[in-house]
Image 1: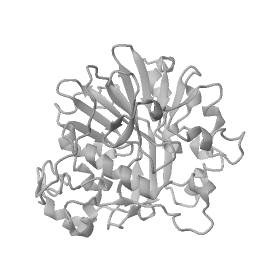
Image 2: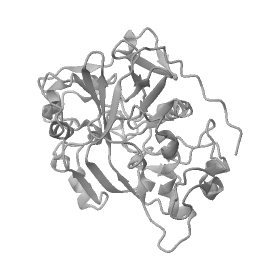
Image 3: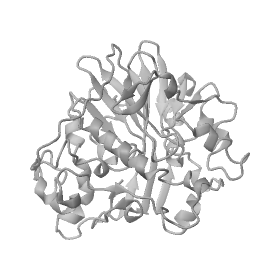
Image 4: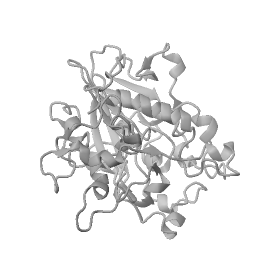
Length: 389
């Protein structure tokens, strides 16, 4: 294993309050997108994206205030007629095999005894349909919290703006608030601009540009002493292969627990994955997110803001910063679409995520994403094709 670079200091200000964070399966299930459409390099057996999307419940015990970070997709997304919601055609053309949403997050909450009226705000990591849910299922007293540049670029929504890719029903009668990073006195955490939402160091919103205009992550303090944090990453990265291995945490010689338990029940040699290593380096991430429209003639600035990658250079910088968070043992990184954590973490309402370190969830889940590449490293009858995003 290569000698790791020491994890960078995140410079999180001290705090005496922790929030309670819970992961909610938003019930979105999407499959069928060819991975070569989204990732480089192509990997044998990693053929089709199959993914859900996490929503996160944030509770501030001293005040009783509640937030949500991301909502998955709305139930009627497949039939939505806004120009950017061509999901029905994508399914008809076979680009998407399936797209299903069983329940709105507001329904999941209500069915488990939590009234949507209790939420002061919903944070959208960004405006893409698989994160915005249906804000109309929350009362207008629940504000919508978005990143910088959102209002100028994505409001009003469809049909007031017939070309909009957002929906006016999400904004109607509701306060829409852009995170005021400029009012944070130059606060930076892990090289991201940061905003202390509750004012006590328990929950920060981070400015994480690149994937989309106004993209934001969140850093939640889950323990005061010792300080421990959850890093909620939205789509800063879609697959853990975009941030792992890294210069801080190279591919280990022995991976424990094994991401391929059928072949190696307890642990497995890291060398099994050597063919996947970028530039043959155990210190470089395996995948890079790509934009299928990059370089296409006729894609102008107006179209670019609707792209799945708004600014490639900014995104690569954000990804490297996320790697810095991921390198810290007191931080548990969760990507919105990291479905390899299914079965590793407790989901709401069964439990919350605050004891993640004590229960070993970071360790158990850190290399589990490698299961997606089983078809490239294990030669068996019917080596699985496909993987979870």
